Amino acid sequence: MNIRSIAQLAHNYYEINREERNYAAILFAALCQPGNAELFLKTCGFAVKPGPDFGIYFEYAYLRDLWSKIEDEEIKKDIIRQHLTINGINEILKLPVVEINRKFGVGGQPSEHFVQYPGKWSIVKYNKNFQDNDDFLKICRFKWSFNIKPDIVIHLDKDHAICIEAKYESGEGSYPSSDVEKAIFKEREKECVGQMELQKYMMEELLGVKTDFMFLVFKKEKSETHKILSWAEAFGSLNMSNMPSFAIEMAKRISS
Image (cartoon, rainbow, N blue to C red; front, side, top):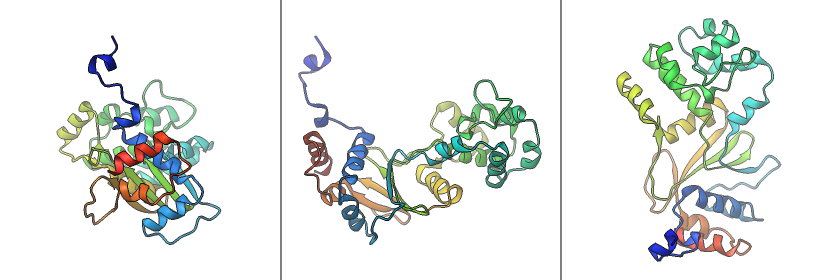
């Protein structure tokens, strides 16, 4: 007998879904329907109309994808040099490429030919290579910024965006997340880095995109740093008539 039969619960998945990313995906799909982006922006207090550089992106990974387009290794080094202001960075970047990769603890076999993606740097490995706590934290923030993926990012144009973090039951996340990495932070007496702090660093400092940050939540709360919008307000602002029935029911469920 299958688990649904044993539990006597044979729901459609949309009736019990608690996955934040699934609700974010439904919102993303709805925002892509004609006219809905404008309605949503108006509800959020943005009196703008989509222009030629307007775009809506789900699980936004700009830094990761941008890095893959860079073919010049000197440009990669210059990015690290300018944005990773740690002691001895110029000397590190003068090393052979394979030694640069080793210094930052790249997982697996370090490449001898190209500077590897910062998101692949290993905290456990580079922990022993950088004794200064502030330098260590800077490297972690830089590394994490290449891995984080805000739920939904709306680009009003190339240099202005809205970053939306969708919540179902969980609160704001923080880094590091693994027990091993948390132990390293505890040993160094360093505080974890909040999810929204890291997103702000990634969007505004590393990408140079002026960004408004928003939480989507069940119950609205005050925040000095972020716009707060309820799911009911978000879905209530949209025309859902062209969405499939399961998506409409999910929107109703999280809005109740």
